[in-house]
Image (cartoon, rainbow, N blue to C red; front, side):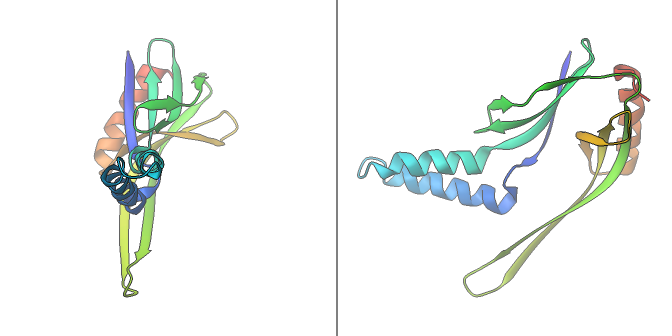
Length: 150
C-alpha cells in the first residue's frame, strides 16, 4: 500500500497566490498575444507545485517528491533499512512579504514533523506533518511498526 503525505506549496503561500495570479493574467491575454502561454505555464508551475512524501509499506521504501504543476512527481525511492530511525521534530516556518505601501505581511506556520534519519543520524527527509504533538506521536508509533525502523 502506498501512503501519500502532502506538505506545503514549494514557493510558499505568497508565491502560490502570485503564481495563480500570473496564470489568470496569462489566460486573460491568451488569445491576444503569444506571451499568454508563457504566463500560463509559469503561473501554473509557481502556483501549483507542491512537495510530498510517498511511503510504500509493502516494499519498505520511501520517496520525497516535488510535484511539478501539482501532478507530476519528481524524486527517487530510498529503501528503508532497520538501522534507520524516525523522530518527531518541531518546525517553525515564517513567510514575509511587503505590499506597495511598505506594510509587512507575516505568516507563521508551526507544526510537528516526523523525520527519517540515516544510520549515522543524518536527516534524510520529512515523512509526515502534523499540527499537534499527540497526533504525531500516535502516527510515529504506527509508522515504526509498518516500516520496521526504530
